[in-house]
Image 1 (tube, rainbow, N blue to C red):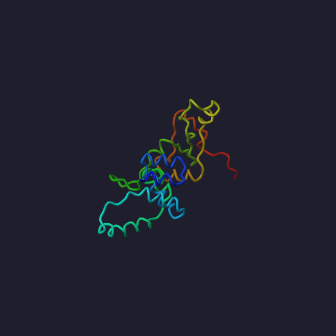
Image 2 (image 1 turned 120 degrees about the vertical axis):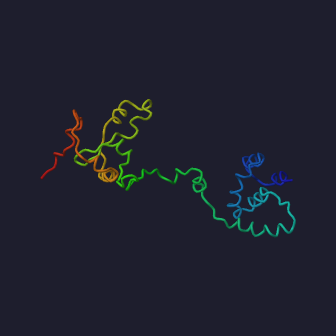
Image 3 (image 1 turned 135 degrees about the vertical axis):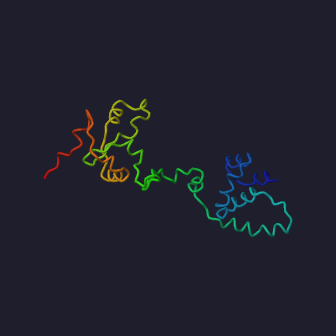
Length: 190
């Protein structure tokens, strides 16, 4: 009975194929949002909805519920998918401990001390991002550029200073330190 009614409607072959597979769950949100626009799609949405098998008393109770469904807000695809993929909305955070449990002291963020190095003049240096990733597909010139060590800008340096304690800001005298000539800024004009 439903297939005969579908044959009367001018539909693309993909819609008929989806309906023949029984994938009505995919088309039901579309039919709700588009049903007010065209009468043909309105007829199609009536065909997609299952026929109620209830008595008149149950139908009278369910009628207000059906009206409430029509008034539900329409969400875009990002809002529908975001509940399944939380990384679209939530950004990763490296939280800073202001007061530790044992001593009540501020703690350094471990990932900062692993990834960055602070020079005594207050500048922070780091490796280029992705310097170890997928090197097999990168050209040798790009690999050489990725091996370079770069400075962090002022905003990043201030943020990294907040995420570390005074232990990481003190001067260290390492034997054969390759960064010895970079610890002090000598290019200031006075």
